[in-house]
Image: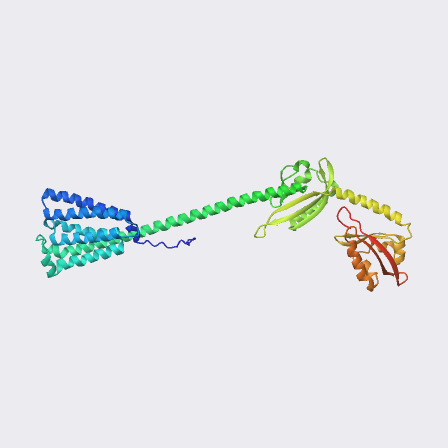
Length: 453
């Protein structure tokens, strides 16, 4: 497992952590208490020379302990003093032996506890250094001549260094096990901390995403309400729909199962328009991305024209999640369109008796569409009314003289804007006479309710 934010994947247990002032001070105070107890015992047994050694060691331990508390953590003054103090006491026990040589046995605590107290490297190096001193005194003639204790036997002098090494090996092994255990625990704590941080980060992201989603949804509902649009969602795989606003106007529930069949059963859509709506839903179910239809829907007690737009929503993997649906009331546009058709019919009947040639074009999304062509303009172009009604898009331009086509394109561009007005002359081909004739024309554009011109 890799760590993030600068945390290493492998934890190295350093030996410096044991040298903090609190641990050194505790060790010194422990030595002071033990040596103090030994001093009392020496007083009771009248071991005067050993009493001096243990008393001095006791005082030094307490003094060095207070130094360890006062000094800064990065300094190792107390540690150095402790090592010197142990070396002096070690040498004293070797030379004088204490009570019948018994005090020398205390030396075995150093190799056994040194790796734990001072770390494997420093503790082992110090223990081995003192082993060299021990071997010097016990194995060399010069060292043996310096020993004052006469209670050592030859077997003791021969075997004690071996026992010393054995205690060091045991202490080193136990400290190695402790360090590896500490390493595993440290790594586990760091992994747990990182996992906790990752979980907290993920939770914060989830909560933030939820908050943002709620804001987007509230904004969307506010925008839909202000735009006077009805919004609902269709879930084709679940055959279910959810309506978000103005559902009471349709007398429909917020959630509908077995949709869209349940919608048809409410008889809200005009019977004549049900096939149109069914075809739209069929296209959606087949997977078309955007479907539009117009139907009459029972809205607030009356049938009104609505334009439905179904837009498929996909997830990041391209699978369909839902279909976002909008319904826009276009009854006003339909009324205006019907009124316009009636006006066009009336206008066409009036223009039939006018000697001036008149034609009315409409610019739609599908292109140019001829709405009215009176008999006079049909005669000028030498075509029938039936033929004129089929003219659309560039059909008008194709009947003009090639040199006049740029002029007509400019005229069309001007008339595409509501309120545009033009006055121009051009040559139009008369199919009956098979020749071009000059026409003087005037045009004006008028806007329609649905936005066309």
